Length: 92
Image (tube, rainbow, N blue to C red; front, side, top):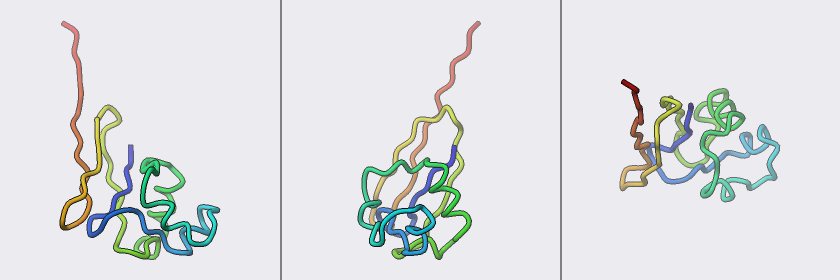
């Protein structure tokens, strides 16, 4: 699974170009600052294709985490970080 996060800020402040690529209205940046599916495959693709041009507020990055990991995004003074905990079970 791939997760989009902002290592140097908070929220996904998307550029106008990224908004267009995602077929979102101009000014969509503020709409993506909260309650967005950070694992949305189209969002991940746009961030990877546009690189730093995808953001209007600090670089956005994509992190690969195992499919069975429980994760959340933690906002700190330096930016966001992804906290993941892998859950696995084995039968004897």
